[in-house]
Structure formats: structure tokens, C-alpha cells
Image (tube, rainbow, N blue to C red; front, side, top):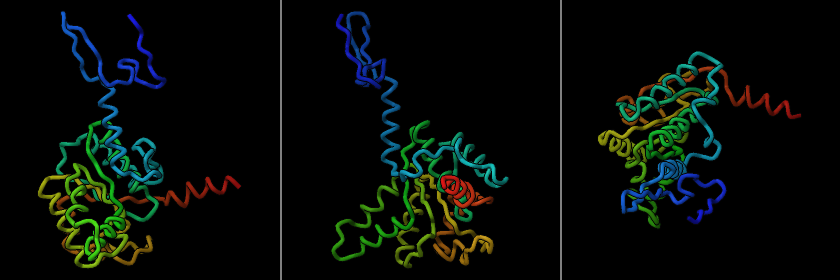
Length: 248
């Protein structure tokens, strides 16, 4: 029998074809190799649109040593991943900048994609607002429906930096309809925000989350997401700042 050359790095079982040939009596049949499922999940992860800076984020490398609230947030994130898809609500991660909200949200999306085959999508709030606003221009190339459809249909949506930009009232209506559609379809949404339900003077913010996104949108999020506060040291200032100083 002639040996089939296997390319370096290819699966040793199927040689990178994705199929395993088996003989049953006088018949030959092909079955999918286990590596195919892994490849499909990697492709789903790539199409999720996680920013490059956060593609290596996991729950294991989340820095939760700087306060009980961060450790609690990581615990809740781990329990969410373990329980998915048997969850009734998403998570709303709030707190001052630099506490790891985006890290946790992207880690959840990555781990659910790789371990459970979830089909997820990452969206930066400000970028999403710009996409929505362009659909209202007379020369727009895309319709509102075509822009929103991927976010409405995604099994799992990460909406990052909620409230970072303050939308016009008509854009808020579109966003409300998007979240309301996901709510009615029982789709899970994860969101992060530097703004909270009460002004935290220590964080430097002067507005509440409701001030930034409106009462209706905040009310809908109450029904869609469990509130998870993150407190502790600013990781960007403390840990990363120390690393940069040590280089000089």
C-alpha cells in the first residue's frame, strides 16, 4: 500500500483532508475526522470579529488578583461558560476603565466558540452607531436591515463599550429594536460599559448608564443581562505601566 504524504502540521489521522476512510466488509466509507469540528470552530472564532488585542484573552489569564470584585466577576464568567447554553440571561459588565471588562467578554465569547461551537459576534458600540447612522444617508450603500441583521441573528452578541458614544434619539430607537429583537428571540447578549446605574465619583464619570443610552434601552438590559460590577486596581495603569517603566 502506498503511504500518503502528510503535510507538516496536518492532522495525523486524516492527513489534513478532514475525512477518515474506513472499510466495512466490502464497502469503503468516509466519516468526518474529529479535526473537522475543531477547524469549524476556529473559523467561527475568526468570523466573530474579536479585536486582535483581545484574541488571546481567556478566563485563565484574567488578572483577578487585585480585588474581591474582580475575582467574583471571573467566577460568574466561568459559571456562565459552564452553564451555556442553559442560561436565561447574558451579562452586563460595568465598572471604571482598565478593570478587564472587555477581556472577560471576549474570553467568554472565545471559550464558548471553541468549547461549545457557539456562533458569536463582537461589536464595538461606537462602531455600530456609525454603521447605523450611515444607513440614514441618502447615498447609503447599505440598508438599516442589512447592517443590523448579523447582530440580530447572532447566537451570542458581545456589545462592547456601551454608552461610549451618546447616540441621537433616532439611533437609540434602532438600538432598542435590535436588543428587543434579540430579547424576543431568546438570544444571549453580553455587554460592557464604563457607565453604571449610579455615578461613581472615584471613576471620574459624571453620567449614569441611563443618561448615555436612554431609559428604554437600560430597562431592556435589566431583563436581558445580569449586572456584574468590576472593581479594583486599574490594570492598564498599574500592571502595564509598570511593565513599560521596567523597559527603560
